[in-house]
Length: 465
Image 1 (tube, helix red, strand yellow):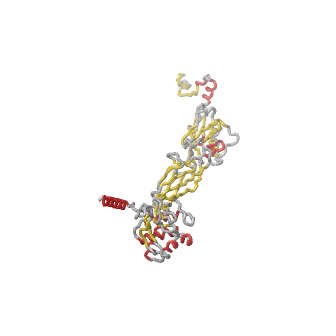
Image 2 (cartoon, helix red, strand yellow):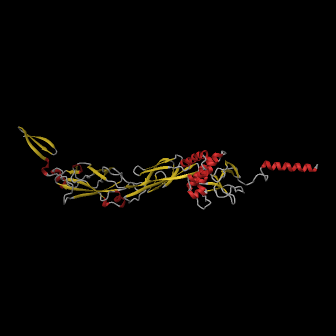
Image 3 (tube, rainbow, N blue to C red):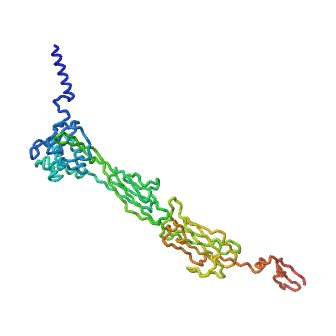
């Protein structure tokens, strides 16, 4: 009874271990043949996949070694793979293998498994070493089997078309408009835009993240005393892909290693924008008109100055801190002249100077001279205005066209005052401060018989004769 009890307990233990897959009858930690076609290769070998200890379908890569029947390691993801003859596979080959193993390799169909194994041999086998990695090295193992070749051809075409995706990017910068525009395919791509000579206008960053379709405001960052500067840009994108350049590797001591697909990855692509040279100079011009064409003695001679930009000029420049560049305009008031001076492009030699004015201009608009120029003598006075690059500070000089000189014509009627002399009597009063003795009698006229009309400065009176 005790023996039967012991035998029953032993039997139950064996059955329990078998249920857990822990009996010695199952090759623990070993790869086993799964599905494929035996005797397919020219030397009568098996071509298909194996089951790794973790249950994944894996494929042999060392064709000259025995199949992996011994203890097999756990999975290890690798970004490089060295062949049995010591050559490292290029990243593109790794990516193609990963793509095919992920998409077609986890199969229970023997024909498809054989075709995938041939694809792996195209890059990792002895024939890949002797013939060169490629289609022919893999097809050799199919030994002319039309059924498998048809599937192999389809897998090969799929890998060539889709395993290594391509991205396109365009980058346009327009410093004058203050924009940088990026566009990329695929639309899932994200990237980083890096600017040189400019920054993002809203954040001040020179390098920042962008999407696959975006327009970004930018502004240049030239030195204040620079006459020009260069803006360039580069964008680098990354996009997800179904298979990256990596594999999952299993090793079996003294026997063939096996691989399967590792998973998705990403790829990168970039674009650069052609350097844009930005000119900074602008050309201010003046038009003026006197506040009063006729001015009395002792009153100010004021000129009104309208500031604009020459045709085709760039906008008024701002410094790095955003403050408009200051440009100095110099005005000279010539006079007095006895007669209205004739208009000319240059100031006549020896023309008298009545006053000088300086205006600091920081934008197009209306300006006015001060009231310090006084009409002290009668006659004609005319303004001439100059903007001379040579008489600006370093920033102002760099902001004007090289050698820039604006001079308004001499004697323009709208730039000319007339200061009128007072009547002679008023002039004498102004000199003596008292009324002359005969100043009261202006005229005597005979109106009628016996009546004399005398007009004086104090009024009229009738005198009887």
